[in-house]
Length: 128
Image (cartoon, rainbow, N blue to C red; front, side, top):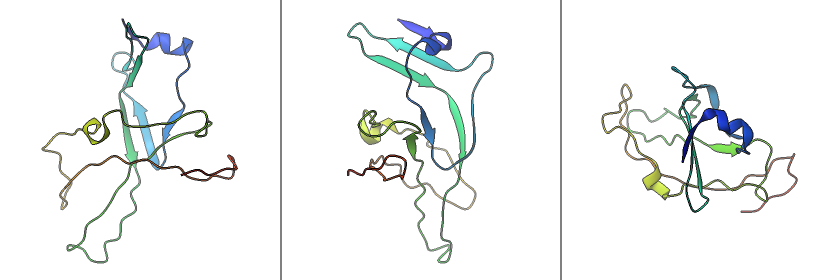
C-alpha cells in the first residue's frame, strides 16, 4: 500500500540531516513530496524529495591540475549507532544522477557510497 505524507506524522521516522547543509527544503508543490509504502512482508519505504545546498571543502592550490573530493554526509541528530544505522541499500547503485549534470569549469568523475562512525561529545563513545 502507498500513502502520502499525512501518515508520516503517526509513525516513527529517523531524524536524519545533512551535515554540511547551508540550506535545504522539502519540495511541496502542490503538497509535500513525501511517500510512504508498506510492503506485504512488513518492510517500509519512506521517500522524501529534498534539495540541499551543501558546503564542500576544496583546495584549489593545484588548479586546474587537481582533483577534489566533495562528500555529502548524512547523520542522525539524536540517535547513536546503538539506536540507528544508516546505509545505502544497494551500495553505489543507490547513487544515481543525470549523466548530463555539469558544474562550471569542473567535471564530475564518479559517485561512491561509504560509511563510518564519528565520536561526538554528546554520545560519549566511539566504535568503527
